[in-house]
Length: 323
Image (cartoon, rainbow, N blue to C red):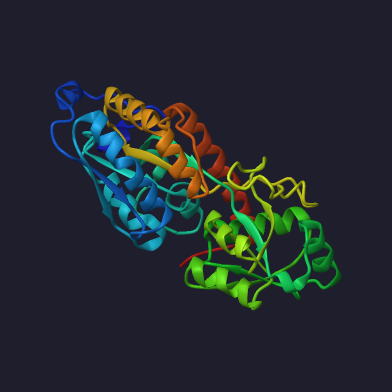
């Protein structure tokens, strides 16, 4: 019988297979590889490297970060699903390969709900809705009013078709009942600069754009989380700013190949949650524009299922596809 057939059919607790007890004896006795399926220097990579030292110290073995970018995170994630389920290969991932790409790609080469087991959601943060100051928008309500007055005339930036900012904007447009025109850029900094220059009106940006807000080159209209964010509490939520009640998070989580023994999952969960509680780690996470989470495998599993359903509906409604 195929190995994956024996494993969890959904995001949930792994099945403890025969021989698993032998596999976990003395674990870990060598370095643990943590695959980041995106390029070095991005937020996923930064979170992984921030946590590597305290977690490695707690486990008594170093965590080695390996960047394997490509295909929206699919390449590195697929490599982890094909690795031995022994606790020595993990993936620190973002939303795209886990809850979005399966609705965009015909075949990713793996099923995240069957081939991976959640360990913990590590961090979360809002997207910042930024606008060019020359437009005179002071709130999401102002943006909606102008979009209704001139349907399709305003442009919004994205950093790729099917990315979280793109889907967040589509979710907002449908909830608000307005039309904006998508202008796609190759990467997030290019999309941010398009708003700075005035080439586009708005961008649902990463929290890193707060530096542009504070420099006055863009105006922050709202955050996309249900409550205000501790690092910049002066910025209202989308709903408070006169828009629909939407919720979009930029989050990162840790997973292992399905079939990884439950005691190893639990020990990894405990080590990462302990690291996230350290004050110096929380301070650095807040400086990045995020908050520490550190939930249980079951909580992360339920969160992933809810996120998958939400983005599937958005993608199907907007008829978004990546070939």
